[in-house]
Amino acid sequence: MLYYEFLNLTHNYSELFKFLCDKKVVRDRVRCPRCNVYIQCNIEKSFIISCAGKYYKQIRNKRRKRQTCTFKISIFNGTWFSQANLNIQKICRFIAYFMLLNSPRQLFLEQELSLATHTVVDWINFCRELLAQWLKDNDEQIGGLNKIVEIDEVKFGRSKYNRGRIISGQWLFGGIERDTSRIFVVSVRNRTAETLTSIIRHRILPGTTIYSDCWRAYSNLKNYGYIHKTVNHKNNFLDPDTKVHTQNIERVWRDIRGMIPRYGTVKYHYEHYLAEIMFKRQFQYHDRLNKFFEIMAKFYPIDDNITINNNE
Image 1 (cartoon, helix red, strand yellow):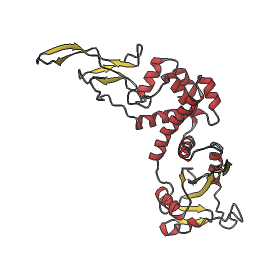
Image 2 (cartoon, rainbow, N blue to C red):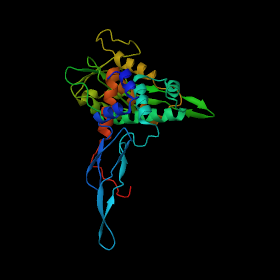
Image 3 (cartoon, one colour):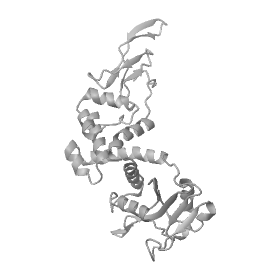
Image 4 (cartoon, helix red, strand yellow):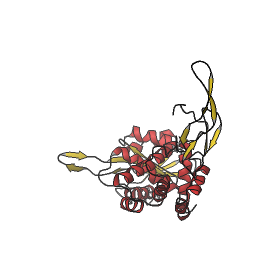
């Protein structure tokens, strides 16, 4: 679906509801725990599913009394939208702009959607947290026989003095597979051989030809079934004899550097920044919306038979 089509959809409750149900991110029915029947949502009236059926309640003198059911539940209960304070239309517009735009976009989102600064920050974080779940789950290995993977490590952020305190940067480590551009990037506490080798063995298949600089942490890669070739960046960016270079992974660093704030980024947030960056590198504009809702459905599955306390 094109972005303008989706944004138009957000102005029509019924069509938006149908879209979200089709994507399996909201429910259109639920089983009443009292009456044991399925209740359909009437979206024209409310986002609340209500039961008006009849059931028998046991009273103290052991007689059963017929009562009208008052059970009700939001179609958003148990979904990614469950804790939202915004209406669903505005949330979906926010998602569309989040998918379409890179930072800086704060001012645009505030003005376009009439949102407070802290609300925009919160919803950007909500979207990134979902993508961070996807990134953590999406840890397939790259490389293999006759494949070349470039690896490198880089430090983001600067040491900055503020009343005697030093804010340190964050090390990132990544690899990119030539020809396919499949990639991984992770934040690391240090760039020791133990740390980097563990990640390499987890993310890169044995038999891969690995290109790197001459950092000593890579010196034992041949012991783990890799073909390892290096380029000495003190002399050349491209080895004139072997033609080895790591320019593709360095290009990734340039792209990431343009999207991560230089100052004030808490280390915890790097994973969330990386999740958005990796998602947008992997999926083109026209694929992102559908993929985002697909991820949402995976991590927040809908259960029509949800068990609710009868007193609710």
